[in-house]
Amino acid sequence: MAYTVTLIPGDGTGPEITEATCRVLEATGVEFDWQIHNAGADIAEKIGEVLPESVLDSIRKNKLALKGPLTTPVGKGFRSVNVALRKELDLYACLRPCKTYKGVRSLYDDIDLVVVRENTEDLYAGIEFEKGTTAASDLIDEVKRLSGLTIRADSGISIKPISIAGTDRIVRFAFDYAILNGRKKVTAVHKANIMKFSDGLFLEVARQVAQDYPDIEFEDRIVDNMCMQLVQKPELYDVIVLPNLYGDIVSDLCAGLIGGLGVAPGANIGDDVAVFEATHGSAPRYTGMNKVNPLALILSGVMLLRHLAEVDAAERLDRAVERLIEDGASVTYDMKPNRDDPTAVGTSDVADALIALMNDA
Ligand code: NAD
Image (cartoon, helix red, strand yellow):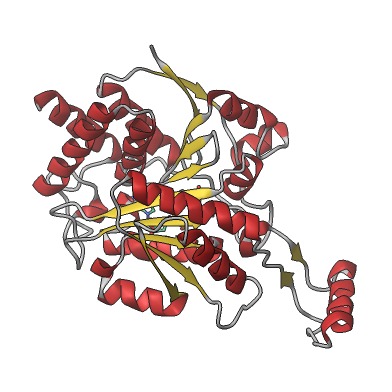
C-alpha cells in the first residue's frame, strides 16, 4: 500500500532537490502517493496567499509531508512561511541529527549528535513591534511603567516568550528520543545567567523533566560556551535541546561540523504530524542550475522512512549515501575538496547514482 504524503516542492532550488529525493525514495521499493501543494512567494503571486489553507489541510489529513525550502524576504515583506507552517501545525520539535559520513569534507570524522530545537516560542514567536508605530510607542511606555526601565523611542522590539508547557514538551521529546534511539545524555542549552525569566525558566523546567528520566544523563550549558565546546570537543555531546533561536544557530554550527548544509537533514514533528525538510534554505542563486546537493533532503527522506518504520528501506538508502560519499565521485560541488572541481556532478546525477547503488546492493 502506498503512503500518501503531502509534497511541498518549495522554491529556489527546492523543486530540483525534491524531485531528486522523491525519485530516490521511490527507488527503495516503498510506494508513495505524493500530493503536491505549493506555498511561498510563487503561489502568493497567483492566489494572494503564501500559505493556502489547502496545504495545511493536506498535511493535517496525511499527517506527513516532505518539504523543499521556501524563500523568506529579509527585513521586509511577508513573514516566514516555514515558521508559519510549524506554528499552524504545532510542529513543536525540530529534530536535526548531525552525523559525519566517511569521506565528507570536514575537520571532524566522528560526529554523532542530535539537535532538538523548540519550534514555536522564543524570539521566533513573531511578536514584533515596528519602530515608530503607535504599538511600539505604547509598549515602550508600558515597559517604563511596569519596570522603570527605558527603551529608546526609536527602537524596534521583538518579544521572547518561553513557557513551562512549551519547554516541558520539548525537553520530554529530547529525553524520549534519547531512550528510543539508545542515546546516553541530554544537554540543555540556555542563557539563563542573563535572561533569568525566559531562559531561566527553560533551564528550571528542563531540570525538573530530567528527574523523570534517571537512566539518561542530564547537564546544561550556556549557549556561548556550548558553541565553543562543540567546535573543540564535539565528542562530549549526544542529544542537545535548545530554545528556538539558539537551536537555529547551533543547528547550522553542527551542520558545519559534519560537512555543511548539503548533508544536514531535519524533521519538524508535532504530536501527530511530521514535516521532513533539510536544514538549509532555498539557495536561490543556484535556481534551475542542477547544481546544489540533494543529500540533505534525501537524508530527511531517510528520517521519513524511519518514521514510517520502513527500517530496511531507510538503512538501504542510508548505506547508499554512505557509499556515495565515501567514493566521492558522484557528489556535488560543495562536497569536492575544491569547489570549482569540474568533476562535480549535478543534483539529478546524485539521485541517479544513489539509485544505481541501491540496485547494486
Ligand atoms: P541557504 O541555506 O539557502 O544558503 C546558505 C549557503 O549554503 C549558501 O552559500 C548556499 O549556496 C549553500 N547551500 C544551501 N543549500 C545547499 C545545498 N543543498 N547544496 C549546496 N549548497 C547549499 O541560506 P540563506 O542564503 O540564508 O537563505 C536563502 C533563503 O532560504 C532565504 O530566503 C531564507 O529565508 C530561506 N530559508 C528557508 C529555510 C526553510 O525553508 N526551512 C531554511 C533556511 C533558510
